[in-house]
Each structure stands twice: as C-alpha cells, then as structure tokens.
Length: 94
Image 1 (spheres, rainbow, N blue to C red):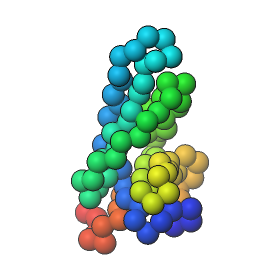
Image 2: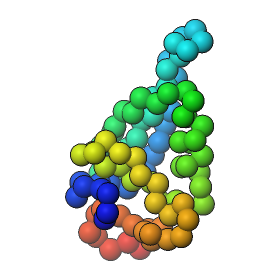
Image 3: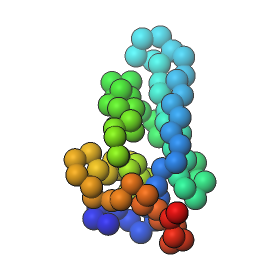
C-alpha cells in the first residue's frame, strides 16, 4: 500500500491516557493496539487529540499503524481505498 511499510497493521483498539499537570503541562498519550496484539504508545499534543479521536470515529474508516514510519493512517476518509474488512493477516476474512 502506498505510503506504508510492509509491517503496517490494522488498529484494533485505541485508548487515550492523560497525565495530570497544570495548564500546558498536561500530557496525552494514545495506546494503539494492532491486530497482531502489539501495543504502541504515541505522545499526542492536547491540541491534536480531538482531531485524532474524531478520525477514529469516522464512518467506514480503516485505521492502520505503520511501525517503521511511526505513522497512524486513516484510510477511507473519502471513498474506499481499503475494504472495511482489510487485514494484514492473510487469512480469509469472514
């Protein structure tokens, strides 16, 4: 797939954690779990968290994680680039 490494996996879970702080000292981190059950921690500036959460909620979106490029990918924001059942696992989807 264009713009992603061969190790790109579908994201199955996203959790957001907030570390308490004062004002701009508060920090957010996403825990992204891919279909191979690997966990990845992504620091996120507070100003970007809302957009990232909205991206994961979009209808028919397929969220992918490219560990090589450290890139979170949202496919199908407009049109269908990947089928909604896309998987990096070569086993048939059913």
